[in-house]
Length: 227
Image (cartoon, rainbow, N blue to C red; front, side):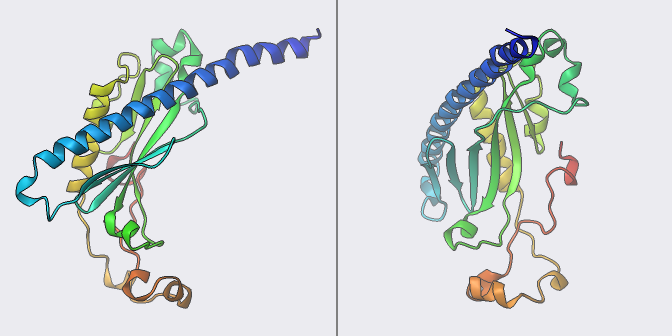
């Protein structure tokens, strides 16, 4: 076998096998996430008896790679990406001894957490944006960290020390719910909504053609200290 063939075999045995392990770990973790979502949904329902008619709590399993949690007027969508990623060379995880000893531990699967307005989905308002609340990275040893807003970005960033489990998923979900509920719908500036295109009007009848967002111009990685 020539040198290039040997290198191909080595890469397949190292990187490709690692990526498959990470993928299956992420898939297993996502199943555990859905179990935690279902449990939290059931617990919340039990404790809102005084106002359950006014507040919607609902968990929906949307298939192998997606799940939804409706909480009040908000929807949190949890979405697993099917690919495995590494990070740019300047990423902080490469400063960890944990990674320096085995660079393949930097290969991660990712689960995104998005926040949508419930009415955006209910009325199919296709122009309404959803916001990235956080993303969970998971490696071949079930170690994880979270890039996210507020507490999500502060409490889950010990990649070398913490492993994902049901308890951690519960904490992550609860932090995401709190962020979504505290992130209020804000009326956009008049000038930003004073006109709509004919296409927008045709696509979505009436007022639903006007983009509705919690904050106009929101960008996850730019505003409010996103990481």
